[in-house]
Image 1 (spheres, one colour):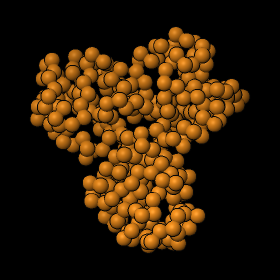
Image 2 (cartoon, helix red, strand yellow):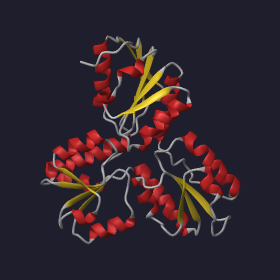
Image 3 (cartoon, one colour):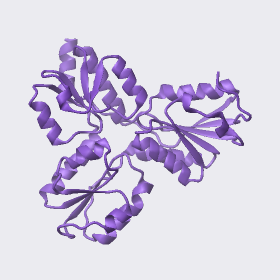
Image 4 (cartoon, helix red, strand yellow):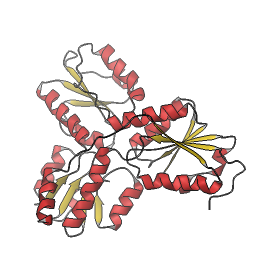
Length: 323
């Protein structure tokens, strides 16, 4: 039973879309299939997705998450996470006779391809992103001599490039359109001839979840964002809520809820980051059900139907295993 509280909210608004995106579903499916067709353990380079519950569950079933290729024994199975890896990591893996499976999100792969293309054109590539994030590290590895990382308009002001007329921009996929707006504007002002990819880099799912949060924020007094602390897109949902003037808390699961948050709160909005499984949302809903909250409304702001196929190297193995 949940802890007692002096105030119980009257209603819940459940954002839709929320939770797993197509890239995350694909990455988790890849690990689960690999665990079925290969002898355990199966190794994964970094966390497959940034969610503590997903990582713990897959770890209990035989997945071992590593931070270096050197941790994988020769001949082992190694899966690259959804965030992508640099060419240097791929080359190192090839030297160890590993069975390699690429779970990189296709939208992240798109950014990698853009980096390669712009580098071949001789451009300085400005990557808008957060230093140290797995996706950023992998992307910068595609053209380390051509890519510079910026996060804020101040970073842009201090930036010096080889040729101001030969500049291109790519973006970490899990950022907020609102967060990047001022930085992109600063880039355009400083480098008038800058070029951009034909299509926006920020992930459709990241954008859709932010739009859904903005919508429910109009009617909520408090928003709970279900997701792990190291999940960039989950943290952006919390920031988007606060930007709309609504208090927001990022929680890993139902056990992180504090009853005192609901003092004076009538309506609670609930969403989940793109790497947070739906069973965590159900746990939060059960918490409020036990408190006596019966008014629950799911509001679908945008419909999603995106699906990504399995990587060819795994599809072939799966077909042989079923034969």
